[in-house]
Length: 127
Image (cartoon, rainbow, N blue to C red; front, side):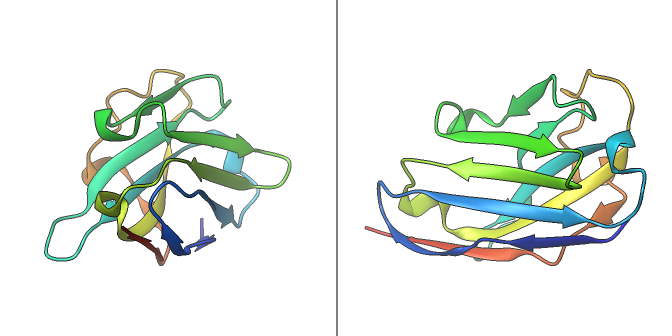
């Protein structure tokens, strides 16, 4: 699976962005998809995950109520809608995939859980 993230940019605090991650391959619907982010000087950290079917999601506490992960299996694409952005959300955002056909995804919060990574897209939020 090859992943291509896009949609990053610069916004002011309170603004919104939608990230996209396009996947190659015919088995996209067999993968759980995650978003991670890496702020300057920090390790890459979990943001959100969605099950293969799209029926279940899980978020890090700091983005709950502001970010929404979704997917379109017909388009081989996963999205991260980000609202009410804060300067602390500034980071390079990465999408990731793991072959996982369970709808229980709460355990997929570690980088080691994912086999495939996109190249990252930069989100900058100014105050």
